Amino acid sequence: MSVKIIVGSQWGDEGKGKITDMLAEKVDLVVRYQGGNNAGHTVVVGDQTFKLHLIPSGILYDTVTCVIGNGVVLDPEILLKEIATLDTQGIKVTPEKLKISSIAHVILPFHKVIDGQQESKRRDQKIGTTGRGIGPCYTDKISRLGIRVMDLLKKDVLSRKIKKHNWKNIIPEGVLDEDQIIEDYYAYGQTLKPYVEDTSLFVNNAIKAGKKIIMEGAQGAMLDVDHGTYPFVTSSNPIAGAACVGAGIGPHKIDQVIGVTKAYTTRVGEGPFPTEEEGETSEYLREKGCEYGTTTSRPRRCGWLDLVVLRYAIRINGLTEICLTKLDVLDDLKTIKICTGYKTENGILQEFPLDLEDFSQAEPVYDELPGWQEDISQMTDYDQLPQNAKNYVKYIENIVGVRTSMISVGSNRLQTIHLLEA
Ligand code: GDP
Ligand code: IMO
Ligand code: MG
Image (cartoon, rainbow, N blue to C red; front, side, top):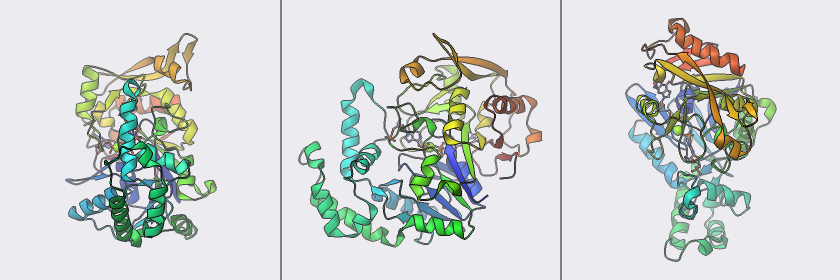
């Protein structure tokens, strides 16, 4: 198999970074295809922790080339900081190791200010964005007002586009200095120039040469701007179909789609979440699972695994397999709940309702499974798992009809159980 897509099947933070890093050992390229530095992908190697926001989670290997595809929105200031941080951690991000699409859109200071303004105007309808300017930058892209990486390389073009942009009609005078923005972003462009490429050409040439590739999704299916819990979503398409658009490759090149699924559910930001728990269970999952945002440090909302959501994610992504993460977090629980449907006025729903009002009112129907109350975090073989842990995995597979190829039992690379050949 040469091209695998790794996607989140819930509301993000499923452990995509850990899984991408782990699988990257055996690949040549890791490509990000959407989102921006709203993503926070944590990779733990030995006693070192790496928090990646824009740089693909393959960067820790000398043998892997990382690509920031055209579908990503790129904040050059943050990217340069991330490169500098990695340098202090002993990872050199050279232009040989990182390729940036010349046609990726750039997040500018006014996007971040507008993101904040829009959130405060929403009052009781807040989305709880990461405040990184993601929505306003994608809005400009779709409105054909955007500034792309290649524009940073030519001062006259950059200056013209920033001056022509309507941000001064939105942001009060004195908040931002236009000339300074032009200076700063031209300087970023000069620093990033050696990294800039036609990445679609680069990735397609790699495919032709038989290289192995991972397309690393950010966010998750339920945050997808089309298919997620709109308007409580991000402004891109995290689902697998977007990998082709966001990297510039054809759909027939994709061999495998791996849905990273947390053994329970978390969500950051606002929006409906039927299996959300409050009180003891939520506290337990948050503390044991260290459920605090990688990007904004916000406590994540926690609840039980929702198989209606998972089956929906399987459908809209075309998942070929599931990677079940953080199973170890359930270790101490006596019983584990799992949602199999939603109770509504019209009976039990098995399919995700597209109307947000229905989803907001969905009352989960739970099955209760006995826990295993044993530490599984050092187990590396499926056969070592306690029977009740195996039952939990089998239960999920039976209901959703897709096989589990990996089980993650800890944040380290080695804390992974492989059920099928990767
Ligand atoms: P991503 O955005 O999908 O890459 O996920 P995040 O990195 O934001 O959040 C996942 C968190 O769980 C990180 O702190 C990981 O180090 C950690 N993690 C990943 N897999 C496991 C696992 O199987 N067990 C435990 N206990 N932690 C994990
Ligand atoms: P990773 O890749 C979890 C959420 C925000 C907010 C909504 C919109 O680490 O899984 P945005 O700033 O994108 O306009 O915010 O989306 N969100 C995430 N939640 N994990 C992420 O990324 C997220 N990226 C955005 O909290 O609810
Ligand atoms: Mg994350």
